[in-house]
Image (tube, rainbow, N blue to C red; front, side):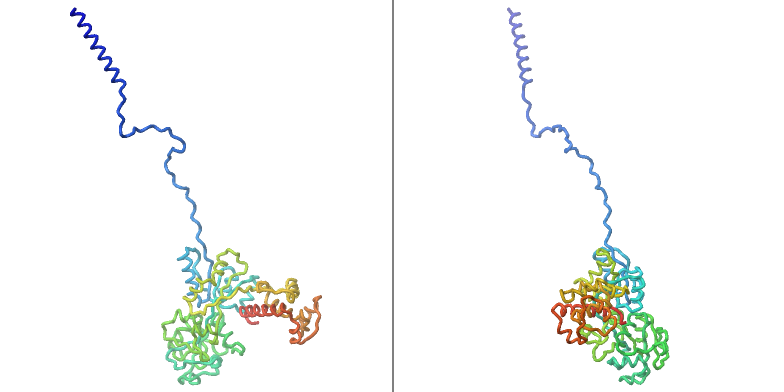
Length: 450
């Protein structure tokens, strides 16, 4: 009996153990608050590769400035242009050079300069362009003054235009004759190729016979306060600073220079600027035109400069508000901009120009504009002007015009009287004549007198 009970007890114990084991196996594990990391199957989009450096692209080339050349008086302006474009706008390019007026004109013709700032060309310089076959474009950016300078101790303040000519021709040799002390006048001029010398000759002697200065005893001018005084002695200086310094050192001397240069380089000196014909050399008198010896400042490029070339772009910039401000701040010019004038240098016979002949036939049929005239030379513009009269039958006295218009199939001469011919003008002829005369005036101002 005891054995049976023991067997049953063991059996119950084993069964209990088995049930406990099964229950432990089926218990759901407690969920963690932190989710377990799960393995993610990578996709092409999710694959991260080490960041590679972007492919290096070459830095863009900086915009370039053209080679600028100029007369001595325009150094402040060209230097300011270079500083503006290289400093503010990051342009690259050569620094401006100053070959003086004559040298700058030749450099443009030779392609050694791309754009120049100076006065109009001489006949010699224009002939050089003709020889090279180089046309050019030029436009005004301001007016300056040719000023006559003396020592501050000189009591004379005003000279007339006639007195200036008499002093430089040797007719007046003593300051006493013009209201000063009894002392010989020492006269300074520049070398013949300088810009200020050519202005002296063209402005002061316009309409008057200019003396032969070489016969009056030229003398190279050096800065020398003890120079021996001689009556009617003409001394030649080769640059703008030397002539000014000589005048400063000699109280009985007289010379000339460009106002903007004097104002920039000698503004704090004891230099006297003579009034001429009662008008002082001031910006106001330049702008009003009252000062008698006004100069015209031009910017010039070769006519074949491409539209997007550095020279063409800078040329087009001159005339902007920014250029007005820069020029005004770096000179005493009366700043004023003109349209561009195209200078053709060919010597072809106008009578053989079919384009000219076609244009003349339109003069009483339609209005022509300034842009229609820029392709013609000054000689061809003369034919156009006379063509307005020829279309109404003017009979010409000048042989070349008489022969030219007589050869045109449409021409019928009716009168030699200009008044009678003008009465026959229609509205197109009146308007076109005005346009031609205005452009002819621009060309003649830009070109040397023939």
